[in-house]
Picture 1 (cartoon, helix red, strand yellow):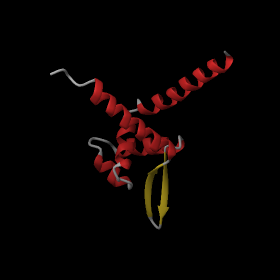
Picture 2: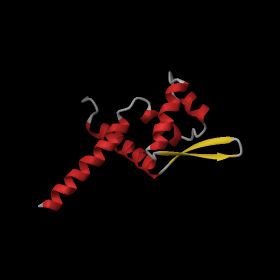
Picture 3: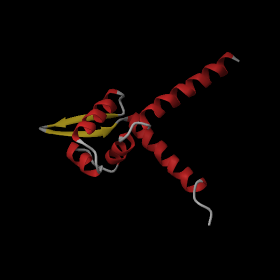
Picture 4: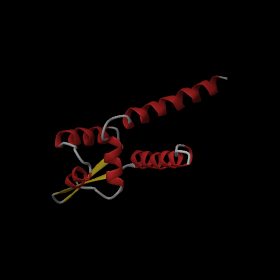
Length: 108
Protein backbone atom coordinates (compact mmCIF):
# COMPACT_ATOMS: atom_id res chain seq x y z
CA UNK A 1 0.00 0.00 0.00
CA UNK A 2 2.78 2.43 0.91
CA UNK A 3 4.57 1.79 -2.41
CA UNK A 4 1.42 2.68 -4.36
CA UNK A 5 1.03 5.97 -2.51
CA UNK A 6 4.68 6.85 -3.11
CA UNK A 7 4.32 6.10 -6.83
CA UNK A 8 1.19 8.24 -7.03
CA UNK A 9 2.95 11.13 -5.28
CA UNK A 10 5.92 10.77 -7.62
CA UNK A 11 3.64 10.82 -10.65
CA UNK A 12 1.88 14.00 -9.49
CA UNK A 13 5.21 15.62 -8.66
CA UNK A 14 6.47 14.90 -12.19
CA UNK A 15 3.23 16.19 -13.66
CA UNK A 16 3.52 19.38 -11.60
CA UNK A 17 7.07 20.04 -12.82
CA UNK A 18 6.02 19.64 -16.45
CA UNK A 19 2.83 21.66 -15.95
CA UNK A 20 4.75 24.52 -14.31
CA UNK A 21 7.01 24.76 -17.37
CA UNK A 22 4.43 24.34 -20.10
CA UNK A 23 1.93 26.82 -18.69
CA UNK A 24 4.49 29.63 -18.95
CA UNK A 25 3.97 31.84 -21.94
CA UNK A 26 6.46 31.26 -24.75
CA UNK A 27 8.05 28.10 -23.36
CA UNK A 28 6.30 25.65 -25.73
CA UNK A 29 7.02 27.98 -28.66
CA UNK A 30 10.71 28.23 -27.77
CA UNK A 31 11.07 24.47 -27.44
CA UNK A 32 9.29 23.88 -30.73
CA UNK A 33 11.45 26.49 -32.43
CA UNK A 34 14.64 24.79 -31.25
CA UNK A 35 13.21 21.41 -32.26
CA UNK A 36 12.50 22.81 -35.75
CA UNK A 37 16.18 23.72 -36.12
CA UNK A 38 16.35 27.29 -34.87
CA UNK A 39 19.38 26.97 -32.61
CA UNK A 40 20.74 30.51 -32.62
CA UNK A 41 19.22 33.24 -30.46
CA UNK A 42 18.23 35.48 -33.38
CA UNK A 43 16.61 32.59 -35.25
CA UNK A 44 14.55 31.62 -32.21
CA UNK A 45 13.49 35.24 -31.74
CA UNK A 46 12.53 35.65 -35.41
CA UNK A 47 10.52 32.42 -35.41
CA UNK A 48 8.19 33.54 -32.60
CA UNK A 49 6.05 36.56 -33.51
CA UNK A 50 5.64 39.30 -30.88
CA UNK A 51 8.28 37.95 -28.52
CA UNK A 52 10.63 40.52 -26.99
CA UNK A 53 14.37 40.17 -26.46
CA UNK A 54 13.85 40.55 -22.72
CA UNK A 55 11.30 37.76 -22.54
CA UNK A 56 13.37 35.43 -24.70
CA UNK A 57 16.40 36.02 -22.47
CA UNK A 58 14.32 35.25 -19.37
CA UNK A 59 12.86 32.09 -20.78
CA UNK A 60 16.15 30.78 -22.19
CA UNK A 61 17.76 31.31 -18.76
CA UNK A 62 14.90 29.51 -17.03
CA UNK A 63 15.02 26.59 -19.48
CA UNK A 64 18.78 26.25 -18.99
CA UNK A 65 18.36 26.41 -15.21
CA UNK A 66 15.77 23.61 -15.37
CA UNK A 67 18.07 21.62 -17.71
CA UNK A 68 15.54 21.59 -20.52
CA UNK A 69 17.97 23.20 -22.96
CA UNK A 70 21.70 23.75 -23.06
CA UNK A 71 23.90 26.30 -24.77
CA UNK A 72 26.91 25.23 -26.78
CA UNK A 73 29.55 27.78 -27.69
CA UNK A 74 31.77 27.19 -30.70
CA UNK A 75 34.04 30.07 -31.49
CA UNK A 76 31.88 33.15 -31.11
CA UNK A 77 28.63 31.39 -31.98
CA UNK A 78 26.16 30.23 -29.36
CA UNK A 79 23.79 27.39 -30.15
CA UNK A 80 20.81 26.30 -28.05
CA UNK A 81 20.06 22.58 -28.00
CA UNK A 82 17.41 20.42 -26.40
CA UNK A 83 18.69 18.31 -23.54
CA UNK A 84 17.05 14.99 -22.66
CA UNK A 85 14.33 16.71 -20.62
CA UNK A 86 13.58 19.04 -23.55
CA UNK A 87 13.43 16.11 -25.98
CA UNK A 88 10.98 14.39 -23.64
CA UNK A 89 8.81 17.52 -23.54
CA UNK A 90 8.77 17.63 -27.36
CA UNK A 91 7.72 13.96 -27.30
CA UNK A 92 4.85 14.92 -24.98
CA UNK A 93 3.86 17.71 -27.39
CA UNK A 94 3.56 15.16 -30.19
CA UNK A 95 1.31 12.97 -28.03
CA UNK A 96 -0.87 15.94 -27.13
CA UNK A 97 -1.22 16.80 -30.82
CA UNK A 98 -2.22 13.19 -31.55
CA UNK A 99 -4.84 13.30 -28.80
CA UNK A 100 -6.17 16.59 -30.12
CA UNK A 101 -6.49 15.17 -33.63
CA UNK A 102 -8.14 11.95 -32.47
CA UNK A 103 -10.53 13.22 -29.84
CA UNK A 104 -10.99 16.95 -30.10
CA UNK A 105 -11.91 17.45 -33.74
CA UNK A 106 -15.32 18.99 -34.34
CA UNK A 107 -17.98 16.57 -35.50
CA UNK A 108 -18.89 16.83 -39.15
